[in-house]
Length: 449
Image 1 (cartoon, rainbow, N blue to C red):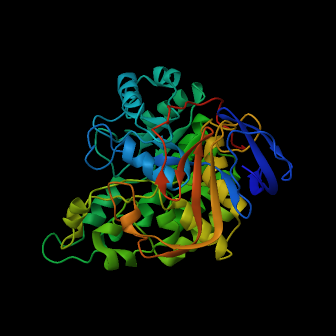
Image 2 (cartoon, rainbow, N blue to C red):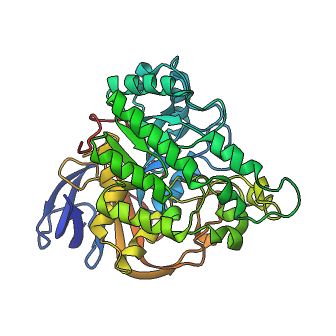
């Protein structure tokens, strides 16, 4: 990779990237031309570490008609994402060592990028220690607004689970919520007749998420556990998280691109294609989320890639309640974030930090993933930061096909993705056979505490 601007160790430097086998051999002076079987001229372009998405639903097993390891990882490669962390909310959910091993077999041989597996934990009886031995990258707890089989139980159960996760050196991913608030808000809506599509957002008010975040932070402090907050979407949750981090909680948090860039008005405009949990919020929440991302209260961006077929979404065209919640996101993550660079909101090094380095560090994959350093996996994405493109549904490789960002003109575009030294995407086209592998934590989670 010759002559590019390369993001390494938080800096943007001009360098030639030397790759030997599957690893980065080193960063060389840009004028050097070492002997190589393949030379990629990247002058005028920027190279980032391959992105690491810490929150992905690939829908296998059980819902393969919506998505699968193959199509989901094709979308990832097209978007410059080289490692996906796969959530446990399938059928059956990933709750046991046997579930874990079955899911690993599903991904092997068909994935176009590397994948890690996240285990669900819904009771004290689950075999956390065995799942850790197999390489679960996180242990997921759902505090509310989830199927009963996945709900983590009362606070005593959650506290015990957090202590056990901490004992194995793991990270607990916590999806916050409060079922009582959601039930009450939902009951206040009309049960029949026409309904405003924005009512879905009103049925999941910010206070439900804020209470869940407060509960998670207090229990994390009591257990001394590493806790990662999923899908922070509102100002109240940000304020609680900021206070909790100030008094020493071992916490991290994520935000999604759609919660950073879309308001609840998209429900009125796009209907079911904008339905997602947590819902889209108001402009003041978006500004709070950007501030939290920029000051470090929120550590990373994760897509919550959660595809549904267009026909499934269309079921909610007349009544939003009939549509499933969830959006595709893997293929649009990087273009959307690069566009924010072009708009002056932040820098390309911020994109690399929040979309690659921070998730890799938090979940124990760094520096194998999320870095361009000697010895790191040669996972990288080459971007043209000046290229203007229109996000197009027809180009989406996910089975969901329809993105809420369709029609957006963005500045900044991935042109080539490399996984462990092999090109897997060039100009939006997938190259070569599936090469993705299961990856497991190589170290205890690394986050400043």
